[in-house]
Image 1 (cartoon, rainbow, N blue to C red):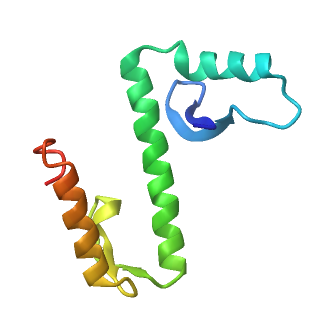
Image 2: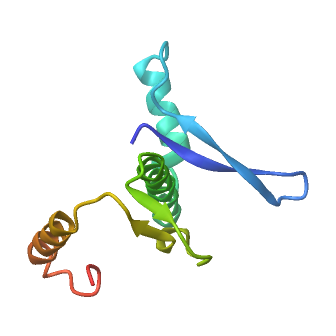
Length: 116
């Protein structure tokens, strides 16, 4: 993890957006980098760390979907409120996808409910 997304707030405490806090900027010492990582992640309660990771995974997934859409591999369709359910396969090989899914499901079969 090279950084986190932190919400930004207005003067009334309402979330107005988010900013990316990098843990890995050129010119920072190891001590400065560690202090920033501790302040923005490691010193937070576990529940907040989980929320930070979820936010980071969501942002990265959104970027990957955008890239796949830009490459013509998938197409945005429908008006589903869940942004991850609005895509249709255009250029990905369905046999490969099914094979990968089958392999993944077999590998993680002990995690019932998480992979279904």
